[in-house]
Amino acid sequence: MSLTLIEGPAGEPVSLEEAKAWLRVDTAAEDTLITGLITAARMMVESHSAKACLTQRWLWRTSWTAKSLRLPLSPLQSVEEVAVLDGEGARHVIAPANYQAITGTPGRVLKRLGFSAPLRPARESGFEVSFTAGFGAAGDVPELLRRAVLMLVAHWFENREPVAFGEGRPLPLALDAMLASYREMRL
Image (tube, rainbow, N blue to C red):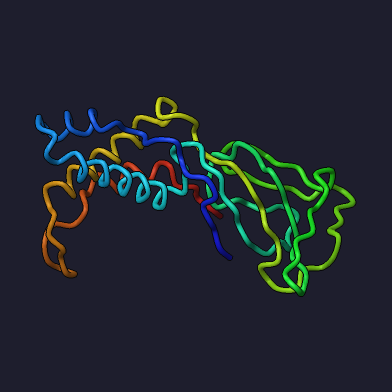
């Protein structure tokens, strides 16, 4: 199974000015570094929470054996296309009438009664789902996730040296607690 970013977010959940105020930086000397740290922090927050902070498009290759398919990122805004790959790698689009997208958190794609794919996939990860996920624009990102981004930016800004296991300062303990409330529990 693989997840590929097709179209990244148009911006970041926090601005350079917000991050500089958080860091108490008044000069422009570190702007490039801080901008890069904001992007890296957003990506880490998204990875650890399985939430897309901002609107972005993805392509997910997966298997689909059950009635429903739980997408790896949420909140789901829309499913643009579902396709199956044949033995030669050719894509065959599945008619939207054969599935239903359940938007929100968690995002799901359900097989409708009478679901039929044009053919059986040639390999385990023979389905492709093209979808859009995210809270929306920067102003729509929950405050807790924005604070997690700022906390990571500050941590990395103050601790620039690489560290080996057991050395240096680990990530802020509060970060895990902040992101835990956004992780989806599975039973």
